[in-house]
Length: 144
Image (cartoon, rainbow, N blue to C red; front, side):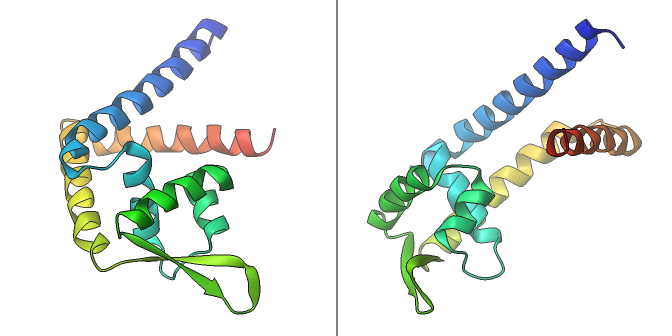
């Protein structure tokens, strides 16, 4: 594979990610949440236990101060609460409010519908091979 092919593949991955997220953002616009906010809620909803603010920031892939501002706005909307951690005064656990759960269910339903549409007509073996390639690239990124 040539350098040009590598470049083209990298550009396609970038364009796919941006277009996918953009389409999801368009479909979620009616929920009154920015892309950053619905992404935080989705990640928060997938934790088995209440994460610390640091754990949530790592999961979402943002810096602590960025997450703090997002949590401020989600807290103002009544969707999350920060809880003190008795064993560490500096840490805060993040809890979903009851009002957030139906919203997350709606986000998940819209996301699932989009995935069904995007993967329509793709052979499961092709998808599995694509996942293997992406996993290999991610491993290379983690172990340069």
